Amino acid sequence: MTHSLRAPRLVVDLDAVAANYRRLAAMAAHAACGAAVKGDGYGLGALDVARRLVSEGCRTFFVATLDEALELRGADLGVERTERRPTVVLLGGPLPGTEAEIVGAGVVPVLNSVEQVQRWAAAARAADRRLPAFVHVDTGMERLGLPHHGLDGAIDAIGDDLATIEVVAVMSHLACADEPADERNRLQLERFAAARRSLPAAPASLANSAGILLGEAWHLDLVRPGIGLYGGSPRPGEPNPMRPTVRLEAPIVQVRDVPAGATIGYGAAHTTTGPTTIATVAVGYADGFLRAASGRGVVAVGGRRAPIVGRVSMDLITIDVSAVDPSHVHEGAPVELIGPTVTVDEVAEAAGTISYEILTDLGARYERTVLGSR
Ligand SMILES: *Cc1c(COP(=O)(O)O)cnc(C)c1O
Image 1 (cartoon, protein in one colour):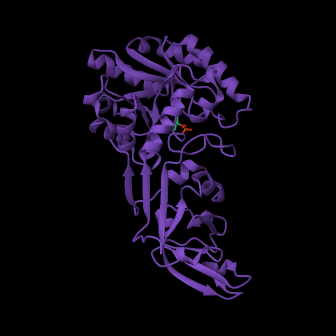
Image 2: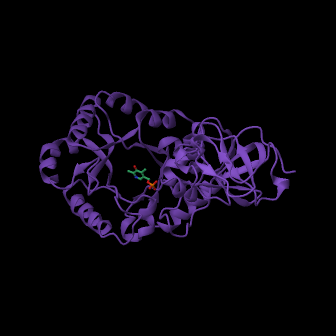
Image 3: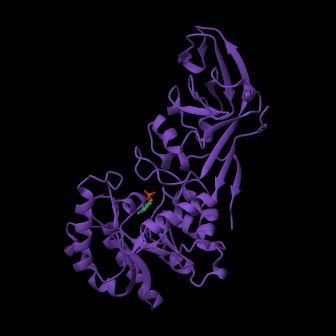
């Protein structure tokens, strides 16, 4: 008998996150390497990840929301051991009325619009000092940032305001970096270069994980990897250079032998074609195990792959373990949902989504074990 589990268990390997950081930083050796830790560090735990990456030399962390920024800023990231306090960059920018809180916490916002620049400049005047910020130019997402088309008009509106701001960096974001052959990658690089000529001189940041793999021209001064740190493939469908960082297991709660012609689970969505051993496993969509994996996903038992049959329910899945060595198939036995045999990218593919969503959906019911924390 293999070891027994009493609940689904998530093991987060920060040594692997650190190894991925070193790898991405080495690929972009002429740039500084920050880290995207939004979405609670892509589900792994933003504080654990940030503390570990500070010890690897990371000094810039990107978050999406003010609450995420305040959580990082309020925590001890091991700063006393470092010469420079890490910068926490708020990608969403200052929403109206939040400027004083952002200033007070020492968070560096990304200014994404004329209005955000104007309000940040007003906060700087009120504070009687230049306040630090990133300035975002949208070069092809049409989502956040000063639009590259019509940038001159925007700069006319904010020229005086920019002088009151300490522009820590100018940034943009790539729409198609995971498609290296897409000509938009070069187009965005060119638009960004043109925009920078109109803006105050400052370090430039463009590349996410996939952008790092595009090559040195895209690295500029500061890179912003996220998914690669967490072990997802920056280019799904190609060999993944990153190390897996999570292992997710859940226990078998029942095993049964069923005859041919039996139907499994809700909607009788699967019918057995021969005698089959079905194991019921204690994980479901309430744990973030996506229902879209019904009848399509795969797990591993004793290192052997086993298909998910029938629908994913709220707290349970059913798997066909007919081909698995019976010594691994018993109540309490661990089933690998994500790990060395079934990668996070494979799980995502089966559920019709991307590794980002699988990781950020990792649920709260898991027993968490964090390896390699600082
Ligand atoms: C999330 C995010 C990143 C990190 O992207 P990955 O694809 O996860 O590497 C970088 N920059 C911005 C602006 C982001 O929102």
